[in-house]
Image (cartoon, rainbow, N blue to C red; front, side, top):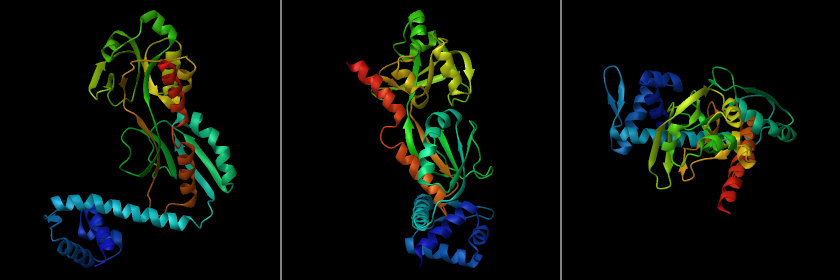
Length: 312
């Protein structure tokens, strides 16, 4: 039995929810699909699928194998892509989607260097804050800021960014400084419209204990630059990622609050449709960005400057 092919057939049956649909996707016959599943179950000595009249369901053994088999197939596809693109010259138009603020601050300065390395790649960069469907809208690659990653597409983590609660020195002189998360309930805050927890701000202390507070938002915005501008003008307390406010913290225009409490970090991800048949131009871009943001990314170096200053 070709175990790799058997894994491919098994994953197709589960994802397509049927033997006939899996056979169509794999360009083979339903009989072959049935044979591979039977041989795989016999080899493992365990039933993998419950066959119902109208749909399939996974057994406990099937669930365990499905996740591992998907990982194996993704790893094989990525290895094949690496081998095939190693001999290909990156060229052609590369359509990239990225969030507005991150794209202006941290990607735009990198494009000249990328073009020097890969002059035959034409960049087409769209900065859009909404979450796009990269397949439907024809993008080769998307840079996404996310706490949850992506289950719909292949992804590679490029870096992380801290979420930091802060306010201007002027605001703090007038209204005082919150010492614990609960103190925020008495402060004017600027909220992010699309925050998953709305106006409930959540923290973890140094012991790992959770803390949540319902804040009073005098303004909401779907744009981080707007929240930053409001905070700089003394309007209230904000939380924003360090990639947006790192320089403000370093230069003292904004002051980080609540030492000993931390919001969850967010990931900077490169999303692409599939590991299979990954083009050379996408591969070199992902590698280039991973190299540019390796180690402590530039925005968190600004935060480290503030942290060291506090410890003196």
